[in-house]
Length: 161
Image 1 (cartoon, rainbow, N blue to C red):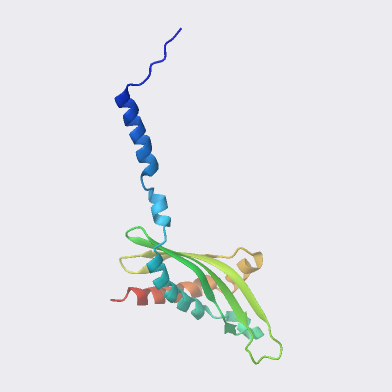
Image 2 (image 1 turned 30 degrees about the horizontal axis):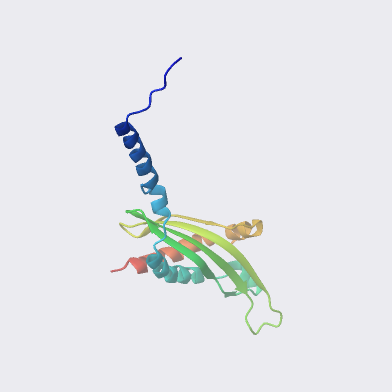
């Protein structure tokens, strides 16, 4: 019969400390996902301004010419040389208050942007919608292009000395 060897106390202590260290050490992935509450609040103003600049595009021709877009959540996180903005928003285009027949259209979107700290440029922007109709509208109205231009302008303002 083979006898099982029990590791010595120093070896067990070393193994235990390695396990505890691995569990308690901050993960780089988790560190990037943590929102900076203050910076998120500050950037929300710039994101809201950029979102209003998107307008209602082709829907305006159908009378839905009043944009009522809102950032519903925004998370700013930084990993040194790059920063990340993760936002949810509603895009609403509606008729004017004086319209005889009132109508509106609302879509929810999610946007993720990567900003390079060295020159405050946006290196990536992805906008998506959970709905099929929203996905079609995003493509038809070039929301990606309009949002990129407007957000880049606002990021430059935020980064100005």
